[in-house]
Length: 195
Ligand code: ADP
Ligand code: 5GP
Image (tube, rainbow, N blue to C red; front, side, top):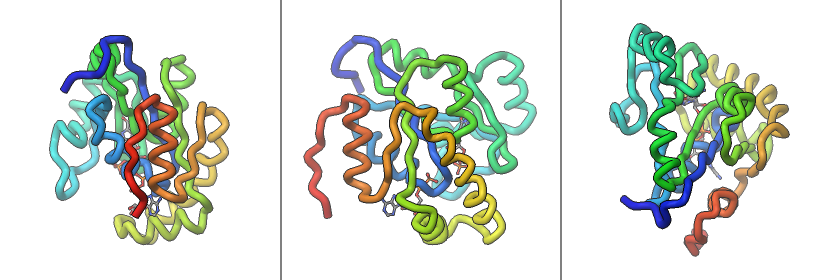
């Protein structure tokens, strides 16, 4: 995999409420060889189909704490009871090699990076409405009723932070939202037809 040019790359940060479509959009962006995914570290348990080192670095709490102490994270946060952190070194390497470095993190983490003055494109993915968000979270079937309510409650607070991002992309039609993010990142049009 080689970037198209050796000029400095950029961080493309994708954030927003749970269920807004971050993972779906990021998966599609990653089809582009210019885009590299920031593999976070987490203390949460591995889900079926996930691969250590590809989806996350799955660490226990002690290993995670050791990395915090060693200053290996640009930011870290507790999200729904688990710790998540963005590793500094792979980001620096990828950006210096000219890649679009895709960081998919929660709103607290995004705002931490923003306050630190971390350069990059900050994109907030918003659902078309809270009703649609609830329907999508239910449709994903990954949540119990209790965690679903927690995520929906938090989504309203997170939505209020959208003005702190450079761009707000409303994920109504998926293809339109993907194209909008690609344009923000300066990626060429894919010309993919809508189904
Ligand atoms: P997040 O990563 O932000 O938590 P997901 O990418 O898992 O959200 O999306 C939540 C659910 O909504 C998934 O089941 C996904 O397939 C669905 N989804 C995402 N974007 C759209 C869209 N534009 N239209 C319809 N369903 C969508
Ligand atoms: P999940 O456990 O469903 O993969 O992710 C839960 C939440 O943690 C999502 O909102 C995801 O964006 C966020 N997340 C993933 N990696 C990081 C990270 O490195 N830092 C922060 N702050 N949040 C992260």
